[in-house]
Amino acid sequence: MEYRVMLLQRLSNGIELLSAVVLLVGFAKGMWGFLLHEWQEIRTETETSPEGIAILRPMVGNYILLGLDFYIVSDILSSMLHPEWQELISLAIIGLLRTVIGYFLGKEIAETNH
Image (cartoon, rainbow, N blue to C red; front, side, top):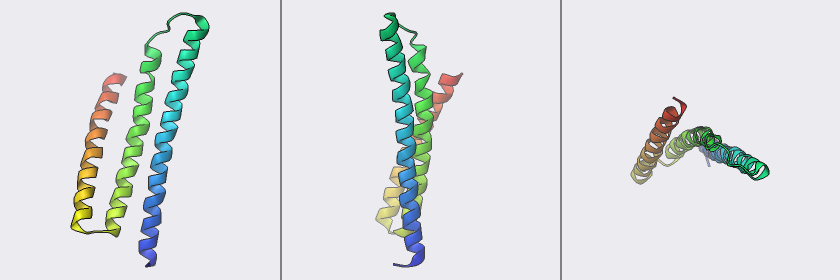
């Protein structure tokens, strides 16, 4: 395997792994915030404000957006390794789906912050 191809493959795999880590960190922080919110409710035996959980959504959403952006970069690098039509069409569809999801998620986060 040519050195450049191997380098691009490793970069693509590394970015994909980084994307997964970003998503898992966002999930862990969101779950931790949720558990703390529920624990406080159990401990005080009173219903806490729903804003406590609502604050978590934009935070987790930002991690999802970042993870999706990294996945798109990984897909672009992968398409450089396999520039066949089927691979490019697959990249276009996946990129479009991730971009649409990112757009609407970003819009929801912006509305939540205002």
